[in-house]
Image 1 (tube, protein in one colour):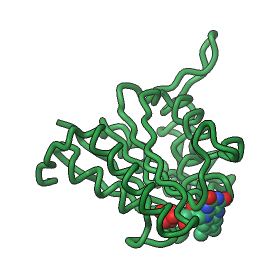
Image 2 (cartoon, protein in one colour; image 1 turned 180 degrees about the vertical axis):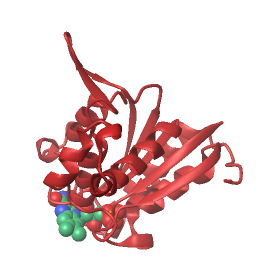
Image 3 (cartoon, protein in one colour; image 1 turned 30 degrees about the vertical axis):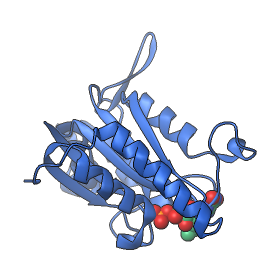
Length: 208
Ligand SMILES: Cc1cc2nc3c(=O)[nH]c(=O)nc-3n(C[C@H](O)[C@H](O)[C@H](O)COP(=O)(O)O)c2cc1C
């Protein structure tokens, strides 16, 4: 039974399609505990120079101000470390991910904590985790479709998650939301069918 970390990043809050799909997924996915991290502009600041410098300093050498600067990065990494399943609800914004999710990545990609460089190259330190990414998009970008090359969301996330050690990554696509109600409904059914295949329709246990 897994400990789940749910991260969502839509500007639409509870009306978000990607979050709605993630909640549908979690209703069926058996889990022991659930931690939820909502990424909003006021809770997920951009990385600044002071924070980046503190992230690269040994904990023992940090002064009070630096400890404060690095506290959010520490907290976000701790959430990742204890989770064995990560569920990302990700809208497509301008062909890529929301800037709040990019800021979250900038805070958790930390040398010596979540990755390191070896003689053989970089090595991710967040291993043995399952990641499910539920994406919502106005258009259609799946493999084999005319606009597949415009998808900078899935290739980027696969690359950066893999860099941090998370290679067991499954995407569920909810696409065509802006292409009329018929297409949206058909694609919602497709996405839900995928969720059911992934979860085996299992009934979720109550979260802690
Ligand atoms: C700022 C913004 C940028 C968007 N950019 C794109 C885009 O590049 N391609 C696309 O297909 N849809 C785009 N959309 C549509 C969203 O992907 C769509 O509304 C989706 O439902 C968002 O997921 P959410 O409901 O979880 O926020 C954009 C929406 C917003 C608000």
